[in-house]
Length: 406
Image (cartoon, helix red, strand yellow):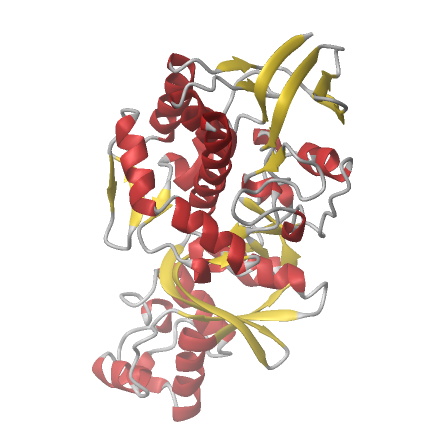
């Protein structure tokens, strides 16, 4: 049976960060990965560009106990993340909104930087090690499904969450932590596309717009976002829409609606003025130049105005008002969100109060730590979830390095 000081379970963002920081300090952890290679989910982040942190990250960008988020963000800031990646050969730069990307604009470069640096510093990475059990006696004993065993002084559970199972998302980390008495909160897809009436958006597949989108449950406004809106097969996605998924799922099946505004700064009489300016313009093309033609046609139909061959000069005041409402308050039902297969992150996880906020060590089992998505913390779009992975792993690494030095 192999013996190691520190075993890291999971080769995703948190596991790889911990491996790099610990190896740099001479601790040489053993990283055990279920799949045949590490970091597959990393390759899909930021649409393949890897939005690896956000310079504006703060507690308000996260859902979870703020004490834990605060401790992690203090221990490992976005600037610390940029400096760290530069130190392993991955140069980064922020965009105008503070989102940080590698200069290569390639997630593969970030993954290569992490795995190569960890190996160069002495971390042993063992792929295809699927954990069957973790037991604690004098030491931890980790047994794989094929019977291989590893003995360790400390264990870091960094197995990730249930989002994107095709890329490695799983419930293994929850199972392991439950085995040591930790409570796991309900898990739901977060940052996922929203399902709506397929007929309402059938003609819009592939259309992408910048706009405002608000989620309501009855008359109550749950959340409002501004950003990219993308129409799919019976769904609404894009960053702005996907930010609403968490709130939809927390309604537990209560009916919700979306209000979409494709011209947030529109004057109150915008459509009146447009009709006066373009009286001979058929409704078929009336909104072209504000929104894509197909979207304009759908909005005109949603306003109950037609036929599309009708000219703008023939519109009466009520019809013009109806078109303006659809342009700035188009309402769509939300049936649900797409599931974990299409989600980017998991809402819920290992209950935080079971861990020390300054070290993320288990309060129930000394020497057992957790980091990343397996914990009950999730962030908004924009690099915040990856930063939580880096920062929570850094918090654990700092404590393990301190113990080794003492």
